[in-house]
Structure formats: structure tokens, C-alpha cells
Image 1 (cartoon, rainbow, N blue to C red):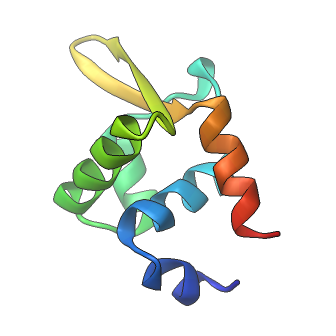
Image 2: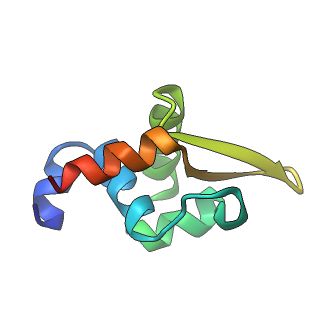
Length: 86
């Protein structure tokens, strides 16, 4: 599945795949919306919306650092991202 096909499935699906591609999959690699947004090529608003959707589905979680949320994939998120390509 190429990037355009993944994007066509929805922004949250796209962000999920990009977080996996960027290896943002453990607390030590957690990243803020401001860090993620340019790396996935979406606006801050689109990125926030996608991350909130993924968090509500327990595919990402976050930790608070210096008053900012930093997101990373959960184990369920890693499995879901891997299933995109199978």
C-alpha cells in the first residue's frame, strides 16, 4: 500500500502508519504534536485530531513533559500499524 492509498483510508490511519514508520513506539521516543506534524506533513489541527482519535482507540498514548503531551504508539497501535502492510 503506498502513501496515497494509506491517506485515502483516513488521516488517523495515515498518522498511525507514519508514527510506526518514524519508530515513535516507546516513551523514550514520544513526540509532541509540534514535532510530529511536520514529520507527517499535516497541519497541527489535523495532527491533533488524528492523535486524539488514535488515543481514544488506545492505539497511541501520551505522557506529559514540561506541560506538553508527547505521544507514542501503544502495543495495540504497533500491531494495528503492522497489519496495514499485511
